[in-house]
Length: 169
Image (cartoon, rainbow, N blue to C red):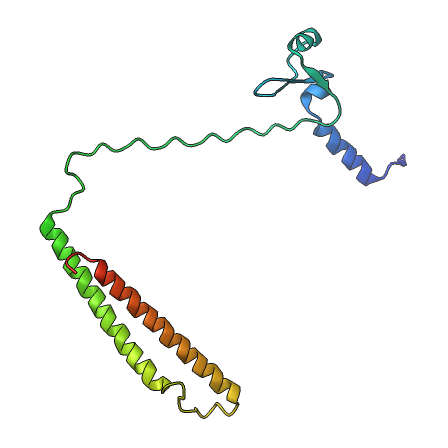
């Protein structure tokens, strides 16, 4: 058995490099870069054609070509009949009334929640709980209560704005 002086890893790298060599360069054909609005790289020209078109030969690193992604075509517009998509005014009034009722119910729930939070908050001095021997725990709970009150008030204001947007307000 003969022993090679070339390390195994180098042999593998050389084999990989030989396998990755582009076919144009492996055959000895030069690759040309031709000017123009779309720059063209080709190996299908003779040296005389390349000179006539102003192309220059590239030497060195192999060229990698990435195909462009074609945009998807927009779906064709759906032909609609006149009046299609319109809602009967009576149906729209019923929908608006339903929306108003849903918002009124939510407003009542939020106002009830706010009343409970404000009662527990006790104007910033809620009763201390048994696990709040550490004063910082108490202060943290008071801050959380204040934040919850602020969020609930913001929710109530948003619901009232939505009710005001409904027709017939």
